[in-house]
Length: 133
Image 1 (cartoon, rainbow, N blue to C red):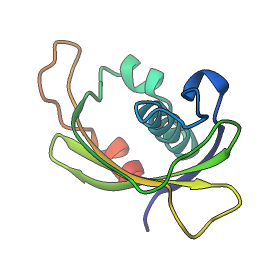
Image 2: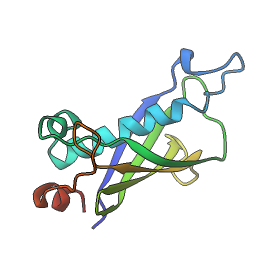
Image 3: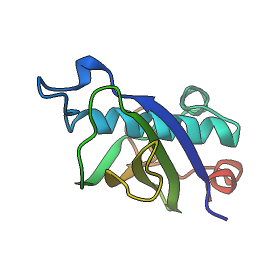
Image 4: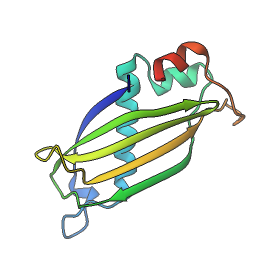
């Protein structure tokens, strides 16, 4: 079964331009909220992973912006684990305006390497792999 999380984020004034449109780079911060909430829902946090010697730098990303999010919109960031393979973990995202659950404003993917504190590739142990897969 696919691991999913839903995170609510309100577009802050500082995240929008003078016309009230959310700046595209903010979506990547919202994706991080989604990833963190998804992991928390699975029973662990990025901090705990780091304490176990695992880091997850982004090595690839793709985003498609379909419609604009605007200042004060309540957004639902839907995050899912796309895959866990070798030393890579992929996530998918859909950003929905809270009152329009069927039409995403944006869709995206991120691919993360799993590395140790020195940046060397490191496979996830079986327990973490099971929790994500």
